[in-house]
Image: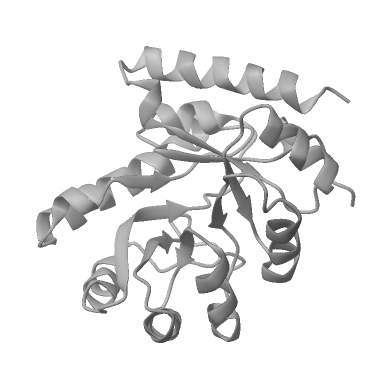
Length: 231
């Protein structure tokens, strides 16, 4: 198994190359290391190599890792499907929530944030592939969800997130990334503060270069960084 340091260096080279192909500043793309089921020792190796943003799918697993790595300055991202009854813990432990996909969840997150005297930055998750097995609002309904979440006093919408269909050829995923970028452009046209809508969370280990070419600002990379997870 390659070291996380070696993997991180390789990913950064690929990120820079993707940015160069479309004349983007590499500083505009943030790498989020996806740590689901990754041992603490291997995560620590990545953090010590310079990884500063980590993404977790499961609340309880995440809270244990947040505690274990408390000595480091880490930006924690919640990237998994979120149940409303976990809202309090997520508001307490995370810096950005990527997966707001329904009004009821937004309402509960807002209530918990108000209790903690916080303003929470969030992304709206869009199911661009219309897959029944995946969470996310539809492309047609994201505008209404945006208007609702924007009206809440303890939440700030920063952009959109998607988990597109898995396709072996990353080029076949490109239209889904482009669709998300176009949706964000549409939201900016109706937003009272369009300058706040800066983030596109899209792209994973096998397709992040295409995602960057299509405008991703946050890429979520697990396997390519930490190696295969235990099954």
